[in-house]
Structure formats: C-alpha cells, structure tokens
Image (cartoon, rainbow, N blue to C red; front, side, top):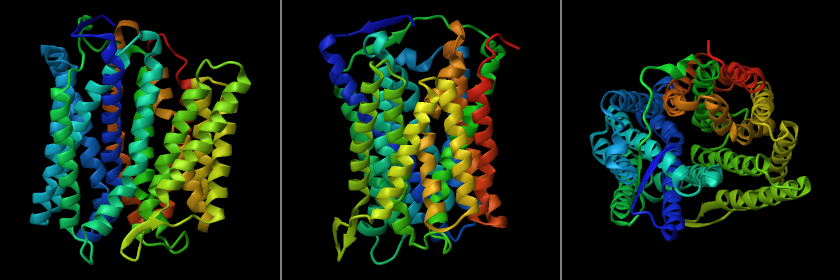
Length: 473
C-alpha cells in the first residue's frame, strides 16, 4: 500500500496506537449492548421475538447502507476518508456514535420503539465509519511486518469491550437508573451517558497530535474483485458468520430464562453474556499466539496456557460483580461454572492443536465444533444446554480474521476493493437474528437455534475447501 505520511514522528507511534485501542474497545462495548436492548425492549414494548430482533436489523442494516454508500462515493468521487485523513474520519465516526447515543434520551421520553431503532441506525452509522477509518489506521501505524500483530492486539481490546459491555449495561439499566421498575427512561439515561463519552472522545482525538496518513494508491475501476471465487464465497461466509455470532448473543438471554434451561431472571441472564463474549476475547488472543511464529512449539503452548488462565481470571472477576442489599459486591461462582467453562477452554485449546496453525483448517475445525455445541444446546436441557451455547463464543473467536484473510488472499491490486465488499457482508447481522426470532415465535427459542447449524456447516466447508479456488470464475 502506497502511503503519504504527514506529521509523522516515530516517538508518536506507540502513543497513537494506545489511543487507537480505546476506539476498538468503545465500538465493541456499544455493539454488544444490543444484546441487552433486545430483552429490555421486548419487555418494555411487549414485542414478539421477531419485533425485538429488529434491534439487530437496524444496527447491522446501517453497516450495509453506509458501506454501500461509501463504496459508491469512493468509486465515483474518490475515497472520502482519504481526502479528509484517517484522523478526521475517526472523529466523524465518534461524533455520529455520540449523536446516535444521545438520541436515545428523546426516544425514551417519546416512548417510541421506532424512535429507538432510528437512534440505533445513527449510532451504527458512526460505528461503521469508525471501523472504515480505524482498521487501516491500525495496520499502517508502524512497520508493515508488525501490522498483523497490531491488528490482533487491537481486536483483543475490542473483545474486552464486548465482555464488559453487557455487564455494565445491565447494571446501569436494571440497577442504577431504574427506580424500582424497568423503564425506557433508564435506557435513555444510560445511552445519554454513553453519548457524552463518545463526544468527549471525538474532541480528544481531534485535539491530540496524532500522525496523519493518506493513501496515494490508484484504485482499479469496475468490480474486478468479484471474479475471484474465494472472495465471493468469503462474502457469504462473512454474512453467515456475523449473522450467527450476533444471533447467539441476541437470544442467549431469552434462552437462559427458559424454565427447562436455567430459569433465571433477565437481569441475571444478562451477566452471562460476558461469558459468551469473553470467550471470543480468549479465543482471539489464543489464536494470535497459535497462528504466530513463536518457536519452539512448547513455548507457544505454554504461552497459550498462561493466556487462558489470565483471561479466565478476568472473565470470572467481571462476572462476579453483583448487587447485594443496595450496594455492589462480589458473588463467587460455584465450582460447576468454573469446571464447565474450563472444559470448554480445554476443548478450544484442542481445536487449535487440530488446526495446526493453518487458517483454513482451524476455521473448519471450529465451525464443526459449533455445529456440535448448537446441537447439544437444542437437544438437551439445563446446565449442559446452557453452557454448550455459551461455548460457541470460544469457537466463533477466530472466524472473522480467518475468513477475511482467506477471502482476500491473492487478490493483488483488488485487495482494497475486496476488503470493502467483505465489510458489506456484515449485513448478515441484520438478517439472521430477526429470522431466528420469527422462527422462535412459532417453534420456541430453543429449537430456533437449529437455524444456525447450516451456517456453520458452510463455514466448515469454506475453511476446508471453499477458499482454495483462487483463479477467478
């Protein structure tokens, strides 16, 4: 990639990257809040599963709209973020996020579900712009040979946000801002606070002396990237992966409260989202080590074991926070919870060994494990079914990066165009959750998870065979 660097000083690189990781954290945090909103809005507005699933449709639908619009503008008039600079692109994304969050408060005062969905669309538009600017910024903020390492680390902070988001959101909505009963105003106040954080971050990024970048590489005209089979199939894989990952997070709370599963309250069930999203964080960090060039092999395995213990400790600490007699304290998990999650971590570790540090093989192994876990969640009950569903987070972890890498391999000059087309495929998160909600309205929440089994079978095929055709149609 040809780059023109403005105001670039080597001493600023580490500082700039540390600031950048906070943005990855923020959009992970705010995206996973959708999982809390689905159950909350369902109760507040007496919605069907399909109607409450429109939360994800509004959010991820914005990704498709904004990415499509951005792609058309960039092909017709030139790359907008390239013109204004990556820094200003990130400021614009943060400001849109702040505006969308702040719109939640008037939506709460109006008591309108449609208004809330519109606010979500604005918020998601900001997250989309933020991702378009921040992902390449992380890649070019330093030597090319360490770009992958920086992206993996940044994604780790993104997963930290998805781990903490459900817990913090549940505490604010159900405990801090609710006065005796759940209310739309509690949601509005929570997001108003988030909005002020985003707007404050936008001002901070604008004022900080971050290095500027401009891409001078000529982009090819037309849609030449689509002639590559691995890209077309990769777009379908991204669509299905994002849709399945978001759907599981969206309906996990509804699954947990079922009498034949856990029979717990919605507020308590929300805290278990951190186990699911924390599993993604753990799996991504293990993937960064597994797919690295660390030698000897024993050193790599020891590093993975140490990372497993450290991240498990963080997840355990985060999910132990609870309300006790009007104040916050720690409620230790029982031994069964610890044993079941560690067994899933051990299975994840075994999956990496079976993947043999190959992106395609690891993707195939992880997808087949998720087929088994989803089948267990549907066909059994109680604790086994519940933790089988949570375990899918560990195996969703490396799918985004592995699919993305396999899909753009050998695209050459079409790599940037192919990347933008893969971003469009994130729209899968807009369709699968409400589709599963519609299925749940007729067949129940538990049976609706069968919808995701064919998605993971396709991902397994793509990992083993589907990405191998690299020579066009």
